[in-house]
Image 1 (cartoon, rainbow, N blue to C red):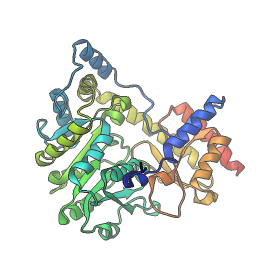
Image 2: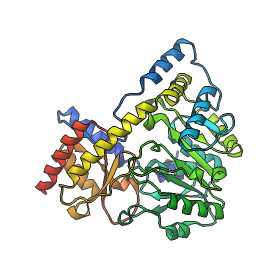
Image 3: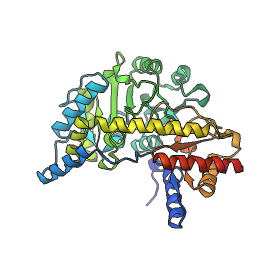
Image 4: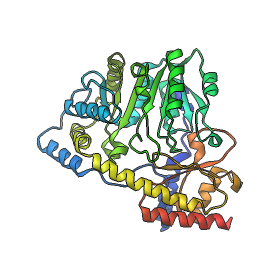
Amino acid sequence: MKLPTKRMSNIPFTGGIREILSKADKMEKEGKKIIHLEIGRPDFGSPEVAIQALIKSIKAGQMHYSDISGVEELRAAIADNIKRTIGIEVNPYNEIVVGVGAVEGLINSMISLLDVGDEIIFLTPCFPAYFDEAFLAGVIPVEVPLKFSDNYSLDINELKRKVTNKTKMILINSPNNPTGAILSREDLEKIAQIAIENDLFVVSDDAYSEFYFDQKWTSIATIPGMRERTIIVNTTSKAFSMTGWRVGYTIARPEITRYLCKTHQNMTTQPSTFAQYGAVAAYESGKSWTEMMVKEFKRRRDLVIRYLDQIHGIDYIKPEGAFYFFLCIDKLNMSSDEFCDYIIREAGVALVPGDAFKGEKGRHFVRLAYANSYENIEEGMKRIKKAIEKL
């Protein structure tokens, strides 16, 4: 028996977020207090309206299979939310597939719409799972690095150079994990122009679409000519702090959705029916919960900035959304792995090496997630400042 297969051989099994978590857990078991600034998960609970709706659903016996595309009430609630937030009309009966979080929607899009050997373009740095999903789907990931020195704006010529006759899809994520950057409408229009000229699909990972602070977020699906070739992927995980509920969705034109639904049917069939009914309540009545989180994340972001401005050796770009900083540590003359190892051992603060997120070569970055309490973040920043001063 020969392992790994060609697809699996491209996927790293060490490094990144999980390795840091494992190291942090081990140190905590040894009695060391660790402040977690590595995990990209809202530290809030889920909306009470969603919890009560789930309980009510279970008591009502709604624990069997739902429609493959998702319960009708949830698809209707998602369509209403999209009209309210993005401004586009979505047919809940043939343009929405409810799946197991955003991750399923992303890999589902690759499996359903791309052939083995096709190329998919990622704007990097990006969520590391994109590369794993591409390899599992048998497609070839192609990087277009967005540069720190350019405030992560799009170099249209670089994107054009990376498009070949094998390119079939572009995946974008705005607000971005790990940079917190938001693609401007001008950048989205450039991507749209290339997608239309080359007949490409665009997958828009909108997991952080509710988390913007100073700059308005725009959906690429609203740009003329893009509605018919865009697959919107979103989830309840971030917007409602429902990470463990595993409810997400894709939105696309009916001729695309029929394929997404077939792959979804054979991949996961559906999320838990009662979790879907909880998500209905979140979309219908959970807006204030999201607004509360966004307000608090902005307060935390500004706290981190106050400390970063006092630390010599770290450069940053002010994040406009999500809940991450992608910190440049070039001036410290350490690799990302060395720096994160030093900070967790010296300061008891867990950060993620930036190499996991790909992107421009030859520079060193680390990701800091301010998805912890205000008090813990402040203590963490004090520790980081002290540790770096020792260097």
